[in-house]
Image (cartoon, rainbow, N blue to C red):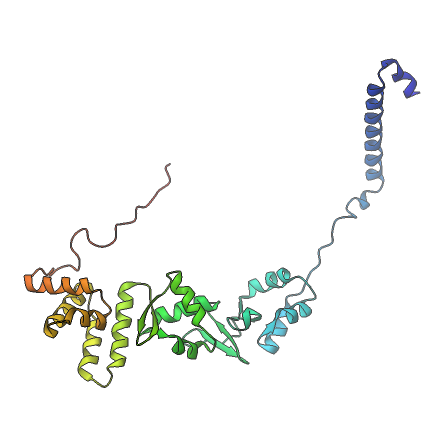
Length: 288
């Protein structure tokens, strides 16, 4: 009947389009009718939420102290790594810096030492997390920096590649010392203190030199420069190079200390001249 009524339009394309629209409207009415009749079946295709009890993870880690990701998945009943990590996140978990970070524990179960390190069954953890962050923190906070074997003795894993990467990314500073690389803090003032302490360790048999190195580490920037210049003047020829090597300074800095001493150009009430140091950082404020 509908086809006979719309046949007067003439064009087959128009007739076909009208029939399609009529079928869509009819289908919509049917869906609305079915929804009203079976309202309890509307959400039958919505995914049911699966709940994973986090207590199973806590129980496993309390028993074993450390666990691998497959063990955690089995305990939780999930095969998805992200689900396990999402459940561990509120608990304060930590991954190992050894064994490729494949072991996990909870901070409340770890007994960290003064360096922020903890070991359990030859699996090593750090408050800093990764080996890179751990090495950076240990070297920066150390009194006299580290050689590679010295740091490896502390962290119990190979640290040469990590230290080289930190030096290349300028997170640490390194220099040659007795045919090996010595790693220290990136901050210049802290680096000079560590170098003085390293020299004091080397000259432990010479009480005078050890006392000089200790005294140097207590000085500010201007005083260190002046003291290095004084040591250079006392040494005579080649003194600038020896003083720079001993105190970890540039030769030009030692020469500047000599000039300031000889000319009496010493600042008595401040460390730097006005305008010295790094330029102040401009604070950008959002315009209102």
